[in-house]
Length: 92
Figure (cartoon, rainbow, N blue to C red):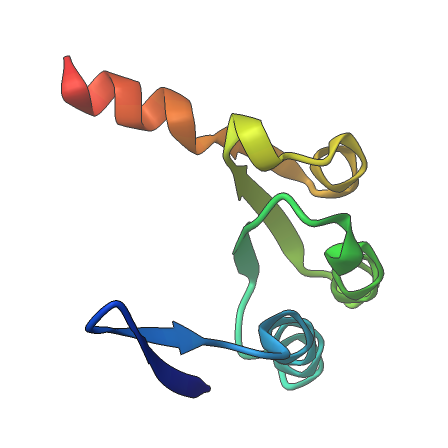
């Protein structure tokens, strides 16, 4: 993580977070640390890691936002749901 100042505010940049998440997903599956994983992302770059976890018997659910969702990711996961819908329900 990198921290820098912009307009008097600290900004945090995270580099490689997708790689860390994919490694955690696959290594956690191998180590049997979970039965179900929830990926909060719309990035289809996670598909190979998800498929590996599924081959190891794990279920993977995708929580996504409408503006950043990949159909390929949604259809690869065992289930998916739109976070925007939940937010709208909470607002009512």
